[in-house]
Every structure is written in structure tokens, then in C-alpha cells.
Length: 108
Image (cartoon, rainbow, N blue to C red):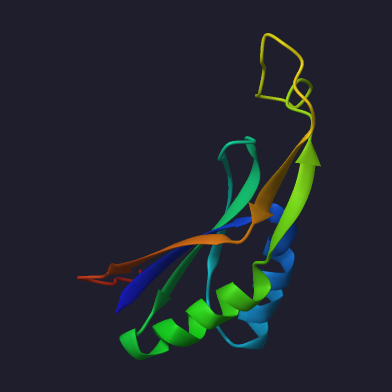
């Protein structure tokens, strides 16, 4: 058995959650914050049998897209610089995924 931890941008979370439901994948959804922009993320915890890992990873990849955004570093929350800086294009979205072995699973 494996535990998949998938951290996705909140903009992708609703689509990914719907894909999990459509494919009978049980997942626990947690609100999280982090990264360079300190914006909202969603963390999914998914327990699956070893043979189901690839299918779940494929769903995550299909529903967590990267995209370009333009930010103004001088006015973006959490980012400050002493001198004004021109707007910057950055890549956001996608997913950060960890696959961990599970020694024991209990359900009470």
C-alpha cells in the first residue's frame, strides 16, 4: 500500500477532486498555503494499493496544469523589494507529489 500526497494549486483542486470522484479514488482534502507566492494550495492525501499508484498519478498529471502568470513583485503580498521591479512572468500550477510506503493501515 502507498500514501500519495499531492499538493496542487487551489485553482486545479476542484477539477482534480471531481476526477477522483469519477474514478472512485478516495482522497482527503486539506487546505494549505505555501510556495514562493504564499497563495492557497490544496493537499490531497490518497491511500492506494501499489497497483493503483500509476492510475492516480495519471489523474493528478491530467488535472494539474502549469500556466504562466504575470506578477508585480513590488505589490504582491509576501514579496517586497527595496526598489521597484518590473512585472515578472512566472510559472504556477502543476502538482508536487510524494509517494510513500505504508507499513500499516487502520480504520476505526
